[in-house]
Length: 438
Image (cartoon, rainbow, N blue to C red; front, side, top):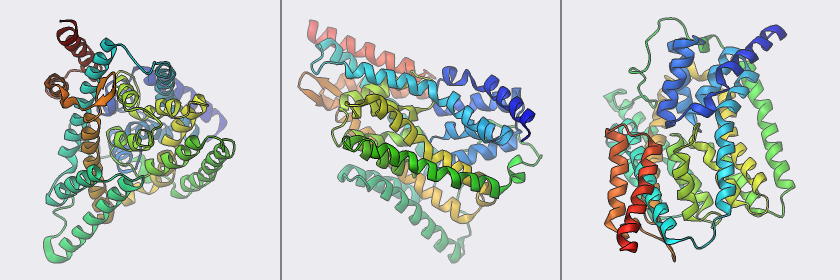
């Protein structure tokens, strides 16, 4: 790109994106609407078909879909530098906010007043309701036949029965292989491809169809792929460099390796990452269940992607160097998906209709949703806060009611998630007044 065009592209990217990381509330679903209205309808950077292509590949690749979508729009319009600027404007404000929250939570005393514990339990209950809602909504789009139903159930069962650092990725990869084998056997048996459905959500209610060719069809696969291959060693060097300078902090070293490894095969976005992050942060004892649930609840009131949660966990998991922990967690969780986007974007038009691709994603997504249900159960079992630690939310029927009300209010009454979280805190205070003060 000529210098003048590059300069104007950078200016246009800054003008379009600078505020999005501060104003994009509502989670991934709302983010798609925000981006479509701004870049398709208002600014007309891309047409509806290109937006649909970018949306599909952002959901088909591992990592946060809304981040990859915001990044890709600027990438195809003005190039790599504009894409990176778009990523920073979209993700950095929320990451800084969650980092600050992590530093605040570090100051929490080990023993909190009973009224604070009650409010936290109410917030936790509302958060569990929101995770249950995410699992429900994901299952509506990913569970399409008997095979995917079975995979969801088996994935959830295995996740509840066993604990291992590689269990979740193995279940997801296994799910993809099962649907691939099943679909190939069905096709050879004469049933065709009737069981193979699109792995990406339907965009029909969002987009106006366009007959114009997608700009992705005119992309140069070699240039972007070479760029991605150059980026990958740099990322490895960054991670290795961090490891070399933190040999005295095994938690940071392990996190810098395990987080990108696990995220690189996480499909389904922010909801699916919750059980993965819990396994890597809470199960080893780096982060308390109390702090994990509290951070997730407050995350619902923050703009930007849910993957910013990793910065918060990085602060808590590395008490000796919390700022470096936040930086490592934040960079590690985003980098694999961006590298894959650089590498695969030019080839996506050819790959998206491949039978093998669709079959693999069908099983991967079904198994991933099963893990979200695992997160619901595990967080339920540790959601109630008492002076003695964590107990199950079934210790009092009131918390079950709060969970259900959070689910129902957001799903069927269009209550924003931050309001549902606030209502959970108020419900916790109400429980305290009735059960402790009286």
